[in-house]
Image (tube, rainbow, N blue to C red; front, side):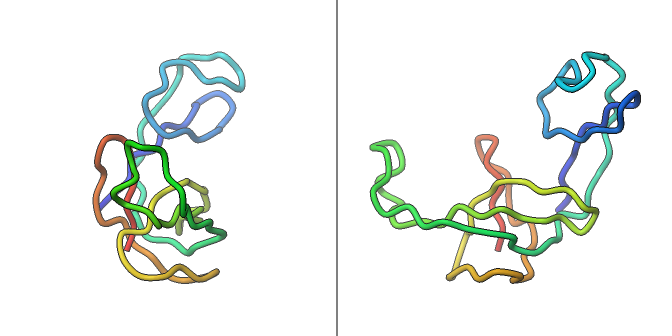
Length: 101
């Protein structure tokens, strides 16, 4: 599964959609590029006491993923226990949340 990132054609900064203007240089020259959805875990935290909306999921893991293409995103780990430098792949996107397994 791919991840779509937006790149500013002026300053080459990358963003997750939705963005309409580059927050870095304020240009509107954003182009969409597909990333592989593969990466490694850079860091993670475990949520034991979640807000009410997510309490049915706790405990759950929030991970920082270094994508193979060199960008870092925040996501949830779908299954298992995380470890630093663990290889992960995009599993699904639900309500603007990226789920890796």
